[in-house]
Length: 151
Image (tube, rainbow, N blue to C red):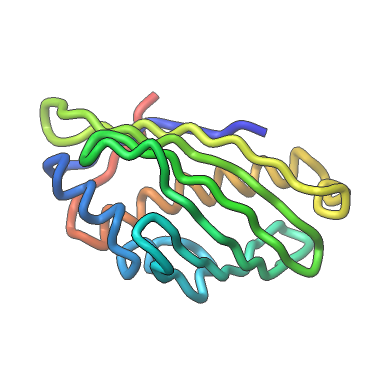
């Protein structure tokens, strides 16, 4: 499955970058986040409850940042595990200066094992895109900026 989008943040690129590396701000914006903490210079541990509509499984995930170009781009990859099975994914996040602030490009791919996929690929896809859109809207508010989804 693939998800993505573009968002305009009404803040300078360095401010958005700093917020993307602040676990308190990220956790406050992630629906169902129970824990998010750095475990190394480029690794994090996450625990969250995911709302898939008919089920709300809890997952623990190990996340890794790679291909980091300070205040420009990075790749976030992770593997999650929970009662319903395993999931994994990666997201490429890029920032660029634009009039009025910073444009963030987000492209993610992900998948899950058969137990999770039995819930229905389209249901999971709709839930994931909804979570992504909600995350960016909430994320901007954690550091006092507006976020506008772009076409």
